[in-house]
Image (tube, rainbow, N blue to C red; front, side, top):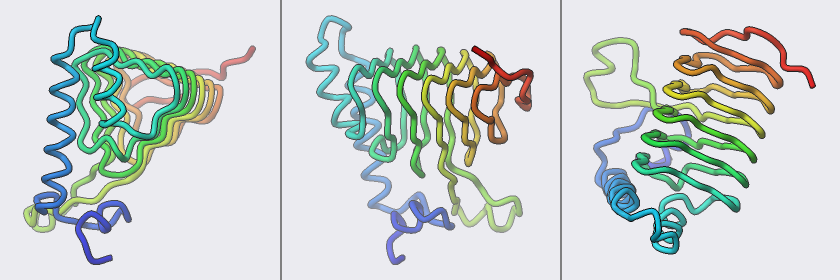
Length: 186
């Protein structure tokens, strides 16, 4: 690993102020702004911007503006996914989202982490852990999903929750920190 980008994607300490990473973030931020400025009837323009921003997407992705992300290229989204207004994905590591997922307004998905020791943190370096969200997951409004979390298929995450640990498939989890409240049965 010689570049800061390679270090970032490997989940080891890297310098986010690196010029290459800064340029990639600036591109993504510009595309997010362009997407947010498009009127809803401008579907073709919105779709084109979204494909540039998130090239690894399935069919029928719909994102209400505004939407924010760090890179976009580290996000993979399945088919039939909906994001409501004002969602943020900090994708310094991969964020994988399955098919038929719904995200309420104000959902935040984070992959970056900062060292616990102040001296290490003061170097400006950080690291990251990937987030994986399975198929048919409904994430309520204002949920925060922290780095390294895996949410299984068919889960529901209650509004306002902070998801700090993995959620097994077919679970309803809620709270701060989120905990499994019950198993969802058919």
